[in-house]
Amino acid sequence: MEKHDYYHEHSHSYGIYILVWLALMALTAITVAVAGMDIGKFTVATALIIASFKAYLVLTIFMHLRSETKTFLIFVIVALLFLGISFVLLFSDYSFQ
Amino acid sequence: MSTNESTLVEHVHRDDVGSRMGMWLFLFTELLLFGGMFLLYSVYKFQYPDEFFLAAKELNTIMGAFNTAVLLTSSLTMALSIVAIQRNQKVLSMLLQMVTIFLALFFLVNKYFEWSAKFSHGIYPGSEELLSKSSGEILFFGLYYVMTGLHGIHVLVGIFLIAVMTRMTRMGKITHDNYVRLENTGLYWHLVDIIWIFLFPLFYLIT
Image 1 (tube, each protein chain N blue to C red):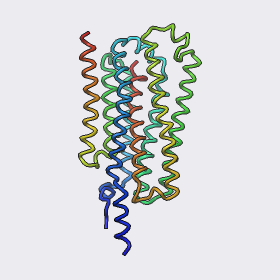
Image 2 (cartoon, rainbow over the protein chains, first blue to last red):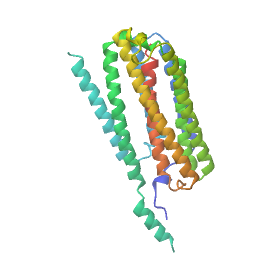
Image 3 (cartoon, chains in turn cyan, blue):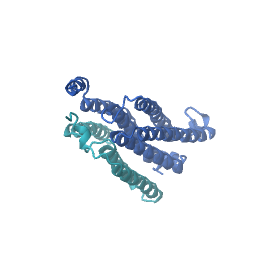
Image 4 (spheres, one colour):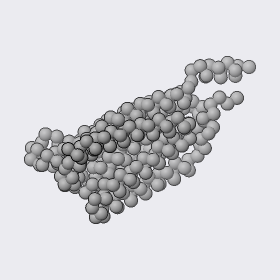
């Protein structure tokens, strides 16, 4: 009798993690290379987009969000949303002072 | 048969989904802790763009990128150690956990050399050298020391936690059908990794 279904939803495979690790290393190399170029105002934006994509990979694969129930995903989205709201509110206040 | 009895006992005492949910809730508080600092960073970056640009040049990008690679690799070995325990490969799992600890220590040693280099150039909180700079640069280095310092403390805590997990694995408290504690430690470790993923570009790559 299997009581803990969760443990059998996972593929238990090493491959996907190594693949994601390679992607993360490549993205790190790309972000350093891009920072070396002179693209002026877009430097920070590009770096943050690449960092967000790296964080997305870590959240979904390394932290198993992809294989958890939807509840976990909703929780994480709400938490990030509130952090986002703090940024938006702060800057909407700060930029117009 | 005694199987019924043992599954009953397991059911009374175990709720792995709830356990992971609890860990995620804790991670959200960590998100807000660091999130507040990122807020502070973004406001000052907005206020002093040129000074931040200048100050970031003082940091060693190669060293930062190298440390990023070290931490990403430690996240990989942590994730793999969970796969190993799922496959009932106890020794391999312990080995991977120890590699994670080694990489985490390596990260901190690099950080030590990085900070020492800054200190020897007279750049540390409250130093004459630093106070003679513009206020934007002072703020940049203040944030640099506080944020990488707090992150470093998290790495230290992670090392301790993983060490406890390795001991538990050795003692048979973490097994192929009961490894939620190792998973939760992994969740914490990956969050520490994510924070560094954002710290690295914001301090080293804005030149």
